[in-house]
Length: 87
Image (cartoon, rainbow, N blue to C red; front, side, top):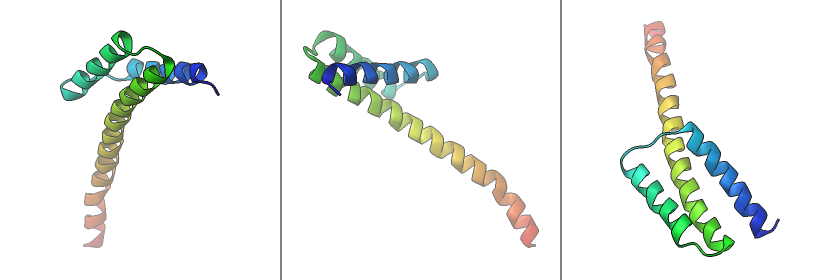
């Protein structure tokens, strides 16, 4: 796989993340910063891939928090039923 293919793959993944999520606050500021870097300062595909990696890390970090919260809610939902059955 060459740099051009990696770059296109990163763009596709970023596109999917951006279609499915809306951010505010610090995450949105970081996303805006790296998008600015991508379109204004990255000169070749290696630099663009680096910046895209930073963008993807922000999306994945936020997604990880969401998954963790969903799991916590799921298990907390089951917790009261378990305590009642033990009594």
